[in-house]
Image 1 (cartoon, each protein chain N blue to C red):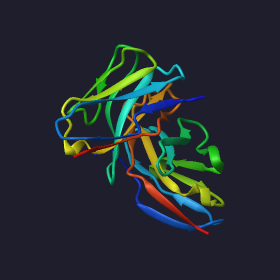
Image 2 (spheres, each protein chain N blue to C red):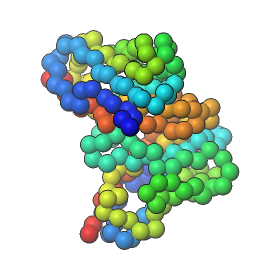
Image 3 (cartoon, chains in turn purple, green):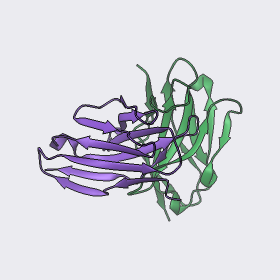
Image 4 (cartoon, chains in turn yellow, purple):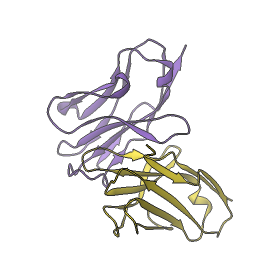
Length: 111
Length: 116
């Protein structure tokens, strides 16, 4: 029973590099989300998806792109990483009215 | 402005003592309310939620929370804390009450330390 799985768990990028974070869920959830967590800031929503083929912007979408080509996967891309994107990234999925199920996070450092 | 406030950044209790973590919100109508827990190096886990009905809700790990409309509060409680409860606790509010979580707003968290 894997739940929500994030890949990779840790990554160090140089400024200007690109990368993709992968989120996979095996609970057949329609909704999926990408959050970032920074000290003293709580969790902030980057992008979300309410179903396969759909995406929408959250609170802090700038510098990120997402895709939901398959229901079970939600990808977060950084086209040109900046030090301000150093953070812990969490993927989550949900049924309506059930609350969020979170992955274990990806710790990203941009140097 | 609409917000979720957890007034205590850090709380320390002794093992076996009771615990209350505070959460206040400022939204016009009664929102959906949640408490999540995050252990070190882990993602968040749902402890309990309130949508409507009985204002005292029971969750996992022996936690409960009480919704008080007059105080716009949703405080989390546990009668006897265990060392394994040391973690960070997040209150979250969905003002839309439409079931999806895209408008979910998290508080900034309360870190709980448990002394032996």
